[in-house]
Length: 123
Image (cartoon, rainbow, N blue to C red; front, side, top):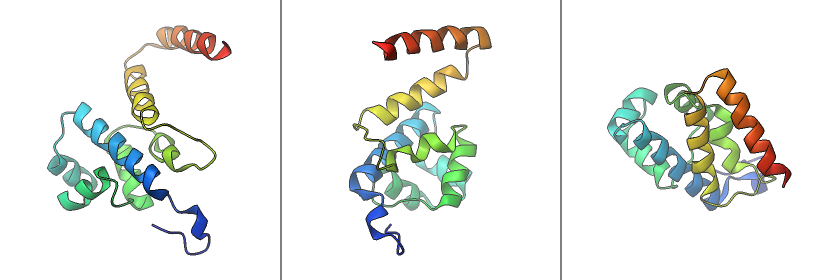
């Protein structure tokens, strides 16, 4: 999808493929089929399939539904399209897995994990 006002701001194939890979992994982690996800977000199975293959970029309304139904922050879904945030293809799915795992932790354990992550990022 190209932004008509700012054509250089289009998501690009790489971002769309990364989004598709992340969406597929999030769906599979939750034990959902493409048909299940399509029903949840009120889209066709063909639309979900095209998103997962990186052939179609969902509209904001669809991204919001995906965020709500898969219980993942919207910014985690769209960061692969941020041109100032270079990501390799493996990063977005890994970050999504960490976010998902962190939801099951207590506040105490989250603080411990934050300290561990900061220790790694300071090196």
